[in-house]
Length: 369
Image 1 (tube, rainbow, N blue to C red):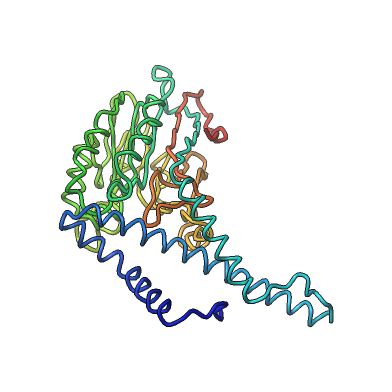
Image 2: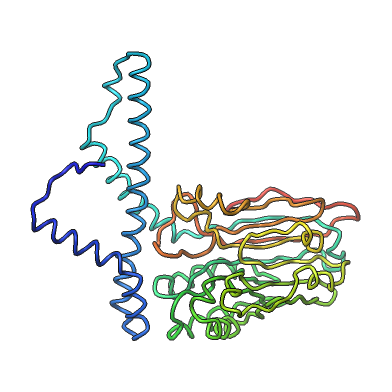
């Protein structure tokens, strides 16, 4: 796409320096963070990651306009028609995506702060009449760190506490980057009351941040980290969890078959599987009732969701896998990279497991609040 404007040499120099700085932003941010220079690291992170989000939107919109112009030109040539009123000049093709991208970034910044509560009701005979109903709250992809800090976490906790969960689960990427100054955040999560406990699995960012420190933080937050293991809450349900596949690259993941792990759990109970990435194996789906996953963020910024869809069959919401198994994929509670969300708002998920008579197994539609 040709430039619509021709800036002078000084402007060019400033633009080039800015571009170079933005390219190396992730590296510079990590270096500043490791040296406890948190204020400049946070400022640069905001500027750099918002810039990346803006660039993605600008080029996506510019590409869409180029496709529009190509189709319009082809139609005009094919039908010998004059659609000049519908055409856009080169200057317009620059400024239209520019202003739209700026507008979407501003909207998306505030959208990322607006956590939604997603509700799913599953009626099943594997929840006993004595229990009657279980409320599981899921958080995922919180990415606590430079950008997602105390104020954002406090809002998330308000949503969780309002639901009075029986069980709280985290499906990975609870942390992001250095954890030197996150101990206070762990205490905030630890103080969330639950009836049957908190359970978590690793995501890819737990391995990037440093597995030992990430697991310690998660444990300090009150979670039992499930790494290729399952357990039975007596008289209630089964919960199992596996490491993110990223751990295999570092040889840090237990070499345990999911099928073997799940098959050891008592079948008369509802079995919940926690798995960061929404990857599925038909041979294993018969051994769990519901898989909770995250990772995809539903793309976080549309149209990136179209790319994510190429890698994962399920990128958002509830889907049925068989006669008695489901997967739910969270859009995530925080953000990664740009603190922006567009057409993929953050969520805290509430799953209600309700006792239903023998032979009945169904879901009710989701409700957003």
